[in-house]
Amino acid sequence: MHSIEIGLQIILMFFVLVSLHEFGHMFFAKRAGILVREFAIGFGPKLFSYKRGETRYTLRLLPIGGFARMAGEDPEILQVATGQTVGVRLQNGKIAQLFTDRFERLPNLLVGEIEDFDLEDRLFVTLKVDGETHRFDVLPKAEVVSEGKETQIAPKDRQFGSKTVFQRFLTILAGPVMNVLLAFVLFLIYTLAAGVPTHIKLGTIEAGSPAAQADLKQGDVILSVNGENIGSDSNRLVELIQNSAGEPVRLILNRGGEQIQKEVTPVKLGDTIRIGTALGFETRRTQAGEAITGAWNDMTYMTKQILVGFKKLVTGDFKMDDLAGPVGTVKFTAEIASAGVAPMIRWSALLSLYLAIFNLLPVPALDGSRLVFLLVEAVRGKPVDPNRESLVHFIGFAMLMLLMIAVTYNDILNLFQG
Image (cartoon, rainbow, N blue to C red):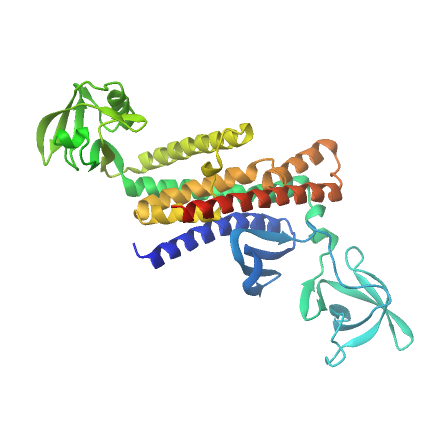
C-alpha cells in the first residue's frame, strides 16, 4: 500500500479514537450544564482552531491524546482586579463584554474603574465612572477580553465542581465508555468482513522446512490430522504438531477440490516445534448473531490479554522492548495497514479497547484516578481538597510523561537499529 494512504489511515485512526473519547466527556459535561471551554485533539501549539457556541475546537501539534477542558477543573483565572480601569459593553443594561486593555479606541464602550466585582456567584461589577459609582449586573455568558483573547466567564453553576458526584462521575466515565463501544463496533465490522472460519488453510511455506519437503502447498486446506477432524481449531492443530516432534503427522488435505494425504515430520525450528508454514482460514459469510457473539468473544479475549500486560507492568515482569510509545505504535500500525483493511479495523478496535482500559487505571492524571477521588467524595460526603487532588494529578502526569519519553527514546533506538 502506498505510504501516503497508510499515513492517512493512521491519522484517521488516531483522530477517531481520541475524538470519540473526548466527545464522551464533552457530551455528558454539556448535558450536566458544565461549560466546556475547549475540545482539543493533541497537545502543544495550536495548528487549527475555531469556536462554535461556547466551545473552541482545536487541533494541536503533538498527537499524543486530547482533552475537553471544562470550567472549574482548574482555578478560574480572569485578568480582572479591583482598582483596574476597564471598558465594558452593555446589552440591555447588563455587561456583555469586559475589556481589560486596548479599549481606548473601541466604540460604544463605557470606561471606568472597578470598585467591586463578582463574576462567579452574584455576577455584578461596580464601576466608578466620571466620579460616580454604578453597579451593573453581568450576563451569565459575558466575556472578558484581554490582549485580544475572549474568555467566557464561568458562574459557579457552570463549573465542574458544582455538579453532583453522579454527574461528574458520568462525565469522566463517558470517555472510556465511548472507546469500549467503538471497540465493539469495530470488532463487529471485522467479524462481518473476515467471515466465520470453517477450516485451516496453509499460508506461506518456508523454503527447506518439513512442510516444503512434504510437498505442502500454500492454499491447501487441512481436513484432519492423524484421523482427527480439525475444522478451524488452530490451537488443537498447533498442539498436535508440538506433541509430535520427530514423528510423522498424517494430514488429509483439500487441494483444488481433491482430497490428498501427506505426511510431515515436525522439527524444532528456533524455540518451538513447527513444520514451517503460516496458517490462515477458509471462511464463510457471517450471520448477524454469529457476528455479535464473535465480536463479544474477541473483545473479551483482548481485554484479558491487555489486563495480563498491565499486570506484568506492576510486577516488573517485562522488558523495555515490550513497551511501545507513539513511534513504535505508528511503526506497527503502518505494518498492519499494509496488510489490508480488515487487519487495520481489528487493530483499531484493539487500540480503542486499550485506550479505554488504560484510562480506567487508578493512576494519577488518568480518568480512573479521577473516578477514585469522586468515589472517596461520595463515601466521605465532602470533596478531597482540590489543591491536593491537583498535586496528585500533576505528579502522575509528570511520571507518565517521563515514561513516555523513555519509551519513545527506546522506540527511536530500535527504529534506527532495525
